Image (cartoon, rainbow, N blue to C red; front, side, top):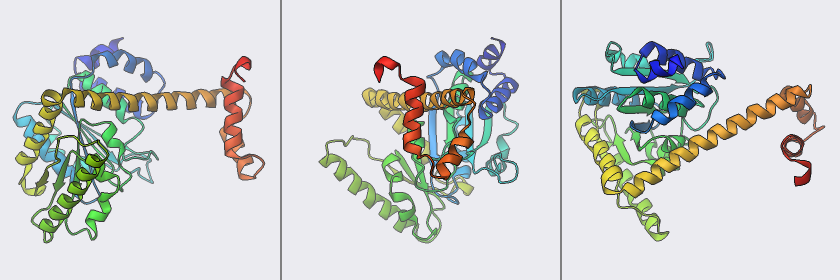
Length: 327
């Protein structure tokens, strides 16, 4: 398949077309992804999450510059809220990363959530597959940054970085539930602001509480998430952040290979589950339409209380997927 060869050769135009088709969920991309998948597994994936205004895009821009200086190629998946006007990404991230536009070894892709929850998009795993097969050394995923439900990044990334910033009001409250458990590294950005030391101390206290809890239930590992203070707009603390990423990578790949295997298996399980769920849903919609019905018509009956969503879902599954002998 010509496009597969083009992607494996690192053809930027071919990759851009393929990413667009993946985001638009064009069915032919499935066979291309199937061909690319055996060529994956070499890239290192770094995820950034945290509340809006924390400076995630500026941090991504800075660590990209760091990795380019040491000769690494980088791909960035920047996830934006969906534009209410165009239905696409707002592209704010690209503005902050524009110094890399002319670098052929940096590929930046902004994508809209299109209603997907968890901080990522439906196509994030597939885009990681493409960049990995393309030969990128580092893949950075920046979540949309809308709240503490953004835990899906931990199922995509090898290293997950949680970014906070002093001065956003009750900033620790904004990140503590759910998000605290997924961080391998914590960043307090804009550390020149008043209250930065207090934010660091509160994070340290929460991490210690979490570590004791995991020890009590027998799930503690010996990686202690560092807290790095940065001023991304001035480039301060970036080297320390990248060194922390490299230490976590070394911890996973050389010191604790069994931990790395767990991370990889978790990523694989998440990708498989997402793909299976998506394929089953599409297959069910096709079967419903072959019966001369539609999701909208069924939803109307549910809305009118003629049906309930629980019973009709089970009924459709029984009718379409269960063999008579299994009932």
